[in-house]
Length: 139
Image 1 (cartoon, rainbow, N blue to C red):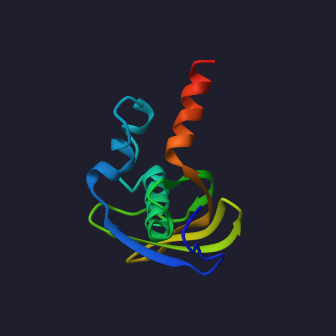
Image 2: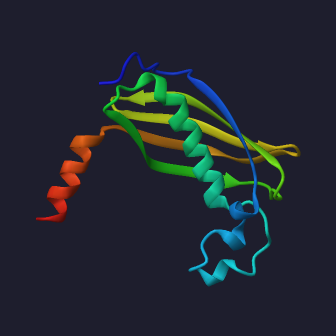
Image 3: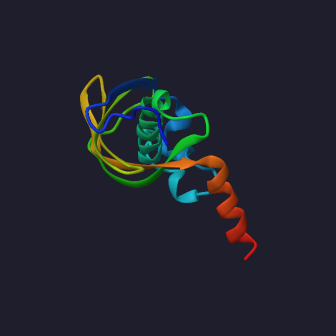
């Protein structure tokens, strides 16, 4: 299992600059409902960035065979963010239950809070996880 994973208190911050490709109209060209939406940071990308920040926070504590997978997200998107803005994600590990990790998360830009909530990740052994999926697919 993981190497010296803290039970609580692990905190990590990451930043990224919002590009046009991160905006709602560009989320996926196959989804026409998004094409005429305002060109602001898509909620999906904000959540993805929050997950990326959790992943980076945990990397030093996991063995080479382990990764974490997102299993729950409860996030509000509080304010719009334009391309060119810098978004900062702050994550904090608030609870562990075996292989399940609970995070408090928030995102902000230069104008303040843009999103907040909670996120759960599960520690998995990648090889075993993929073997189980392959077996399920062929059952």
